[in-house]
Image 1: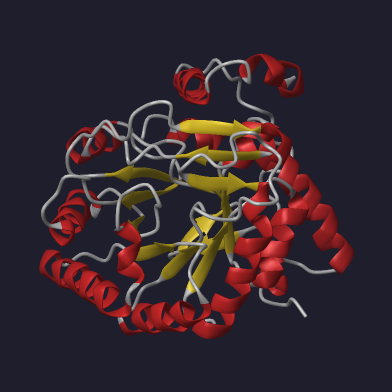
Image 2: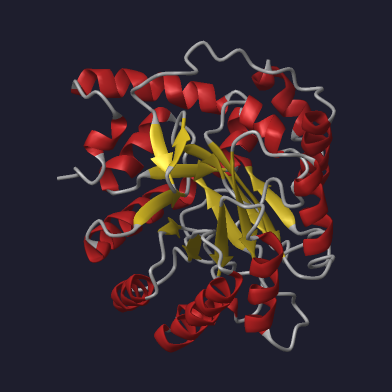
Length: 348
């Protein structure tokens, strides 16, 4: 059904189409898709000591304001991450700011952390109890004079309602945000948040989301800081502000972050490098180009314990989780394994 609708949807501006998708999920216009394989032991796992029916998550960016996370759980996602949320409401960058590269099965966005602000999002989560594992992705306001303060304020706001909180240092659409990949700056940021965590007596896990565009030297430095600050998981990775030359779409040189199929291989290689650097001490959530069972399978082989997607649903439709699970099941049964975790990091 989605393949028939896609051509009509793609005639709309991408941001308008996204708004319609959110409204459709919010008001249940997208009927719950029958999941005939809901409790398959091949895909069962745990994240932060909580049971997941599968390791496939919705990445931050789709449900920015925590409006439809329970609808996403009903579509089959094992976990959902909302945001990025900033302390204060902000509009983001001027429109147009989202571009489809249909030939490349990709998106470019320069949204700039558009969201309703932490108080609004917090109230919504309190009012609408999550039916699955929910992460909240946080970042600083564009005009803030103190980014460390903004991260701490968001952590304070959400630590009681989130199953984990992601520190977003990797968006290419907030000026100089990626400077937090610097070893000293990242260490200061994570120490500051951990200190606040102690004051609050919070046990909420902290996750860090990194850029796909970091170099070899940065991998080891970032890994050292994450390990020394007892970070429990890393998301690899975010959108890329490079990787454009081999694209076909006429919009390929638009400023912003590239997501989808063109960064699949790049993110998978980065996962493999971090897996070796972290030596199994920090869980990896793999993101970038996942839209099939084979894509998820490759991320697991590289060292990811979980995967997230967003652009894949734009091109494959709301049934994507069930499609991925069906293909994954075939691949895993062929391998003769009892659970997908047996293949994590087994890439030769």
